[in-house]
Image (tube, rainbow, N blue to C red):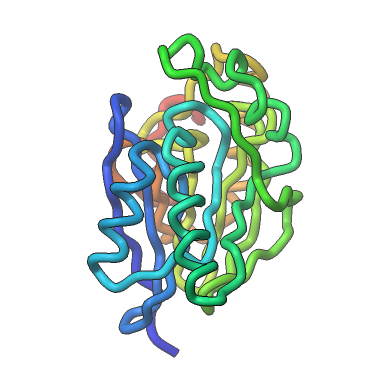
Length: 220
């Protein structure tokens, strides 16, 4: 089976990482956190021969969801034309309220109120399979109540959203955030993964679990 690859587009005012995963040589991809400009994301993927098989949300803050509805609409319009099933958007079940509240997801304060929804709400340790790839949902509340990460064990990739950054962690001063909960989530849920697990955060550059265990000043 072909190797799983990952690509990145940096989107919007917060320079948010929108990732797409695919098997080398294949056309189906999984998009993680369509941060903004959903039509642009769709066009870029289409130009490179990709079809979106699923969309994963690590959490519901404005800078991770502003592009969601436009991307979902574009994918589904093409799917209908081709006689394919609509794309599914996945998010943790504890994030439903935040996705549907423009105050709690901070989009109103950011000047562009946005509410949205997932097609399927998942729980900690659920598995999602799409585009010939499987990931495990890891619930990591703290940045938000329903924040989660997606672990692609085969590839050794963790899509961490705003839970864990290179030598930093997500802020917890927005609605439903808690620093104590976040630190516990990282130590109990993420630091049990192999040290060589590559961490792809919602902002900034990638890191590894082993590096963060040793050098992250918030987690010592």
